[in-house]
Length: 378
Image (cartoon, rainbow, N blue to C red; front, side, top):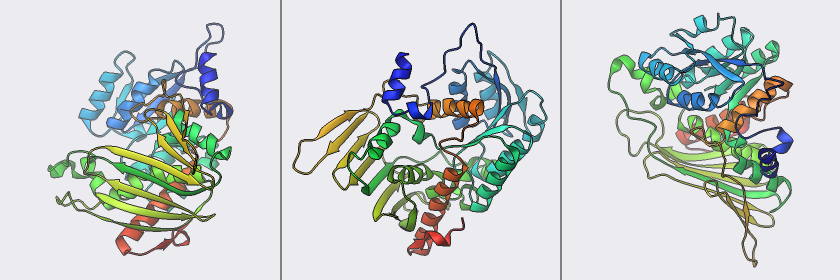
């Protein structure tokens, strides 16, 4: 009950979310939900750690074409060993499979998601949902036809901190948002391999056609938060950026600055660097004040002109990071959607719209002009 009370205070109660695994009653044991994980790289390892904390979930199969990554994932699951596969189509032939988690490189998402849905499984796919709108629409259509849940791994929405911020905005604490900015300054994704045999398998984030671009691959998280927090749709995008630091043949941006104009005369800016010490900043200015946000401390600093700052505390003491904040809560919500049939908070439409913004931003940077959202097919 203490856990439920905390989640309600964090603004999650209305969504039916819970922090971490639900308690399992000895009298009414929950049925096991059987998972197959496709793509066992580093992000998948984080998912494994989270799933192992859920008594109602069991990982029954793992799949990857890279043996070293598959072996590491198998080692993580040695207490209850799953079956290993090097082809996802063989994994999907299993009878004891309820859910497929897709954590492959971006350019493989559609192929695996569509096949999993058609096989009659619920799907949780990592972000970005796809690298084109066509891919997203294919997944959306397949999900509708299958009657199964398709949830996109935009986990920041599920974090108790951002749930609290969203709740405050909906309550009108600063009026309608009018100017928002989110900066992400960090180091690079990973060390670039020089082995041509694994180039597309290891270096895919450095190629435009395989990743969709840095503003799609990384910044889809923040574009999704913009839409969710502001509550209106984007109209046009202007971006600048390039490759200043990593001159090793990569195609994807290592820095960018993006401005998005939303309906309701709200502007949002996003700054990104892939070659700096880590740092984030999130600030929302509304008609009646502003919010200065720090997800690590849980501080939501409410600012009003001519008044003393007020600090609203979001309880992040048990915030489930799973490698990225909101991952544990995202998994709990996904399980709830499977059990109840309700649509996910980060449904396929949210996934697609974050992709459309990323595509518009990439197009703007490369063509050096404003891009209207009507130019990006829906």
